[in-house]
Image (cartoon, rainbow, N blue to C red; front, top):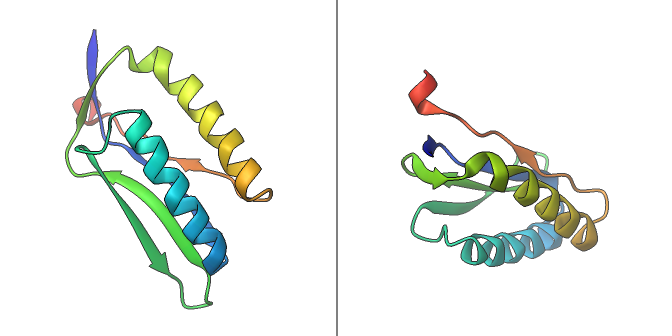
Length: 100
C-alpha cells in the first residue's frame, strides 16, 4: 500500500563548516533514497550566526512501504549525522496530507 508524505527533516543551529558537511551528507542521502526529484535541500543562516540545513518536498511524495522504510531511514540518518557532527541531531517532521 502506498501513502502520500510531505517530507521534512533537518539539522538546526550548526556552525557554518558543520552546515556544509551536513548539506553534503543530505545530498548523498537524498540520492541514495532516490528522492532527488522530490525534495529540495536548503541552507538558512540564523540571526545569531548559526545555520540550518533542511530537506523539504515540494509536493507530497508517494511511498510504498513507508512504515517499514521510515524507522530504518531515520535511524541510519541519525547515525550518519552523529558521526559527521557528534552533537547534531536530525529533526524529522513527516506530514500525512491525506489525513488532514
